[in-house]
Length: 306
Length: 241
Image (cartoon, rainbow over all chains, first blue to last red; front, top):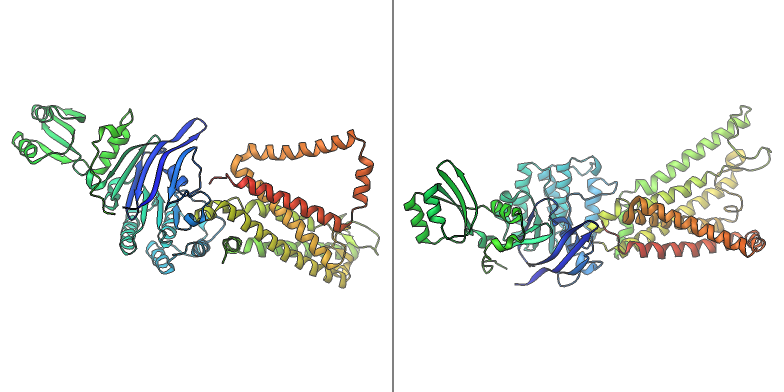
């Protein structure tokens, strides 16, 4: 496994708050990683530092083997599309023409077909675009650049469900054709979950979860049924939260369940439902006292295909 | 194509602002000045819009000052919303700065040539037929064409990079920083004035400026422009978007 992005002990302080607090994370080359977390968790700051747009207060950053800041050898092999990207007084076609000059692997055909898919008109002034259409422009640049490291920050803010599906499909199709390293931050976790090979969850500037998506499957299970049966089943297991409604209870049990466990649950008349990625992230990021990582058993990472 | 040239082209990808708008403003200003003068000459004075009243003298409008302000403004804008997109395209701050300064020099060079040519036309047509000094300014732009061109090239580049520095200071430290930046310059001027007064040097200063030729002034402006480039380049190093 080659490493595309490696961040060690990265801290970014602003007056009054710490945006990133000793973040250490490694992203394998040729993978799609979801960067998840709540608003203000530090996702955008991390991406901006990776793209050389912001500077760390301390710690080290390496992208494609070198620190990215002011390093054009690295920067031209990387594209970063921001949700709040500012553009000059350009029309759409001006922005794309400029992008075509700076990205060595720029694919004009791909950009054109994406424009058609999104119904993005080249002669529109960017400042008159709706939020969704601005996102579409960012996606066209981000995919058209075909950069070895592709960073997306909330790439589809304001896009409708159809357009989002187009984005997922086109990203996967192009990724299959030309594998690259994609790091994508999003709030729409379950919708994008199928894309991710790895998941990094940040909360309040700290990494609370860093695991392969495969490793997370079955890491926690919602057990529901009669209170007594649930309590009997979960006795001695670490649990996240417990909800009771009358005689019914629902508990999130942490840890993999084996066949014997499942048989026992069936005999007790319990329902077992694996936690979705979104629920996991809510738990990892929502726990009042960090580090939440301690609550999530370290899932095996060997399932990651490099 | 080197990155610096790409950055210079980046500013021209939407050419209207930098190319068309300049000359639309100049053309409108000239048309207005000529019209006012024509009315004045035909016995319908419209007020003291133009300088000088003796009929045989060139009436300088000083309208090119607007041209100078324009360069200051586009210098600010070349950082403004353009820097975030430039950095998003994987350009380093260093390349963005130097490429934009290169663009400023090329634009100043080209615009200076056009003004020098229009100045020649102005002289040949007797001030557009109405003894108008639109493309001439006393002392500053009144010599041979190459002198006009060189002074404009240096002066416009200076104003552009000065505007860039303002844009960078604003990006890094916002309004408070910009105010402090202006205050620091005013303070430096006041300190210089105080120093000259303290050493009773005003006679020397007066002699220096009265003896200063336009070539000498252009040279001074070139040195100042280089100093501004050094300052802007140093300030953009830690700019974030």
